[in-house]
Image (cartoon, rainbow, N blue to C red; front, side, top):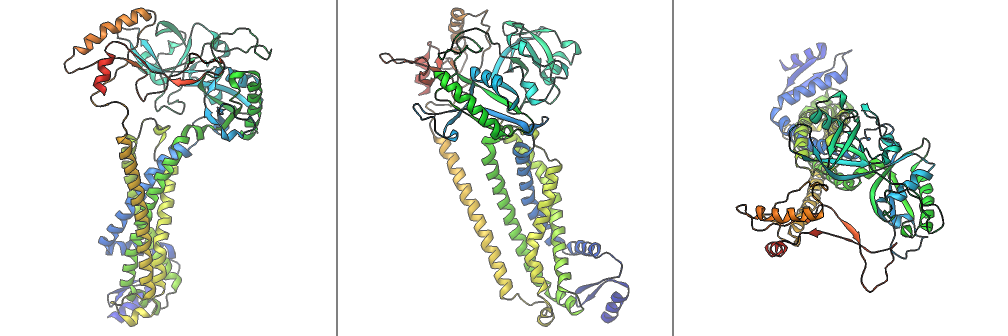
Length: 598
């Protein structure tokens, strides 16, 4: 009956069993790849337990790799959501130590923000930039709704007139800012779409309306499109406003006319804003850097405040936005890739062992005229099918892992809201699955092609030769090496985290609560504000469980509040005074609070 079965297969095609070995014959005109794939699925169904182990092992590695790659793609690789985003650059001042020679390379300086006077000069004299704009984060204003609701604090962002022009985005309602708005005392503002929809119910009549911000009225001149948010904060601010500057005439130390600035008290070494620019078409970052360096060096020669800042750093805006997270994310991607390699090594070892058990099958095929290339192709297709099945489950796992990562990730990671499993990520998952299938299937396919007639001579229980044992040994060594690297790296990261948590901040942070107050400067001038706090502290201290109350600005670890100072008995250069961080604290109850914190 076995002979008849074989003859039947030869004549009409199909599969027959000879001594427990399935033999598949080829029919003319039937696509070979289709038959190989169909046979691969039959093999997976026949060895269901083995297939599940391999697929789940691959799914873990592919899923973790895909999830982290989606984060890397969304934060580091995907273009900024602005027209011609490749032309957007970040401009920063390069500051050098006191007395440093000006012949030093620009890369030897310290990157710092930009002062308003320098920004105005760059905007006026640059020929390589289509437009230049400045912006500042981290400002809050008290918003008073028109209806009978209590005031609350909202986030605001102050920008120069060309800010939206640089980004290439126009308001969906109203207009953008103009240079005259930087001097307009009516305080024109542009609302974010979310703030407009939540507070004003998407009213199209919002343009021209006055709203109360702080102690003054502001005029709404525009509303930005939905989803617009400049890179940085995960959520857009409530509104954008312009910096109000005052023009005045004067003479610089070099005899040149004094440029317009934010206020007469503003100094060139008060570097407090970020600056972005849009390159002209055909102009590269290197060309813009050379021009701005020449401008800044000229300013350093004219103004003593800029004598230690004579260079400008120009780099793509995408690199500036995500630069601080580039190395950590790439390291994380490398770590999960190593996990995927470990999974591949495990699967390759399993397939090698399964290949040894199938030696008799391969030997029968060779004896019936099968070529080595046919056997190699069949084993590689089986590996690719396993990898693709693992990739499908891995994508589902990546979606779940991505939600967990986004929920646990720090909120200050830029562009985190843009992280998603899109077409690029799916293409990456497919490519990883395909390469993974080929990668862990090469050794088993090569081993299967060497079976030939030795499988028939040795029987089904034959064990692998020295070559196969050497392959398995190499896979075990590779897996062990990668695991040790991962283990050592994980140990170092955990130890660094533990040591960081053990670093004393200078006070006991346990059982401390903070709150912010939005006080009107008109209703509470300095003397009245001090009286308010003197009355507030006893009321807060009377709350059960409260041991001490005080106030400070800024609170620890929030941001730096720098100011200049002079030392009594030493000569003071008003253009080059030392700078230090400053924290303002309330006098009442401060001794009690210090005693409590220590």
